[in-house]
Length: 161
Length: 398
Image 1 (tube, rainbow over the protein chains, first blue to last red):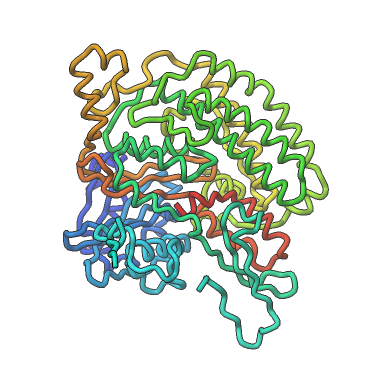
Image 2 (image 1 turned 45 degrees about the vertical axis):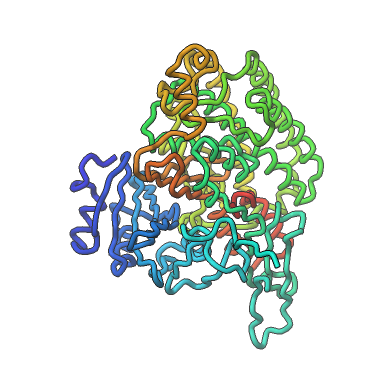
């Protein structure tokens, strides 16, 4: 559990590597969240995975949050686990509401494959460089992305003839 | 158009086979697309989503207490593990202290859930590979566990027994006696299954060296639970990141280095033994005391108190009509479900309903290892490989 964010090893390491990459760091209930600039996401993830003292080799979870109507609207959330440090870390990337795109993390963690497809399916966020970006849970011909906050939950209003 | 594999030009003799979603050995509604050369699987693809129910969307429209009932229906073979994961996440959000008795009852019941879930896995895995009688024995023992669940919560499968802040009800008198009876005879029954399978030459031929998964691949693909431990990685959240006072129990984490179907079979059998140890410890050391946290603005008051105290009545009214308000924030809580790391990622905006609740379903991640296990192997082994990762489609599709 990190007591002070400034001495938290992964954050220190990332700041040394690229001071501009981490936009913001937060700690809540002993969990650390780092907001990463989307341009540096891939390199940051590789550092976290490969640095011998960190070894975040296990991508536990990947999902997204829709903050509609705020802008930037989407947050893609990565939950990393380091079995060596026995530590979890949450990364977040902020994306705009129109044409949200972010680089795919499948080359870093193959586990991201199905999770990114799920986020694409349910939020409509495009992962660039994903090997097989198609709908995974909803039918292939479905319109819209159900987990977006502006998705009509009740469906279309029935019109009587 | 359903998902399919594109034919490779010049390889027209290969058969593209759609397996499922109605195939009995795909454990629910999993569909596989296999490209076969003779009887060998060359490429494969899985197609899921047939059971998609939109739980994550539904969570956003339900209070935290109502949300618990949805969790049962995801992994329907381990409802109490799901209840626990959801409640722990909400409790982390609220920063709530849970009394010891509630924690011990939770541990006891989730370990029974693990045994019960592994029994269904063992039975159906064995029947997939042609060993019929194991299935009947496993379901016989499972019935006793379900009866215990029914005694405690009123339901055999959709228990919804844990609440944010503790338990729904005090367990009935005499329930520990039932658990004790089960714990006494169960080791003998485990020997019975082992006598049928562990040294059975047909079983060995069908499982040894099949569905190999290396430790590196397992970690890279996000595989967790017994499937990871069958590849030699000693990683169990109950030990490494204990929750609900697991640190007070003594048990070992069984691992096997072989990484094949047989190794995962042995790991799960050993896990049942370890779970039984935890159950026995929980029974012997069951503390007395309250089953709910002292937090009147979160936990429903007792019925008697509600009838006699105006404050309790007001809290009761507020909780039932509106629900409680966790602080703004986000948490990720992972537990070791029978299938692996079950995580709940909960975002609160301060309202009585979660702004976002994402479930990291272990089966969803574990399924990604399936193509790795079956490609280059015989089609008959596909069935063994589906069985060995122990997927629950309700949880995969959510």
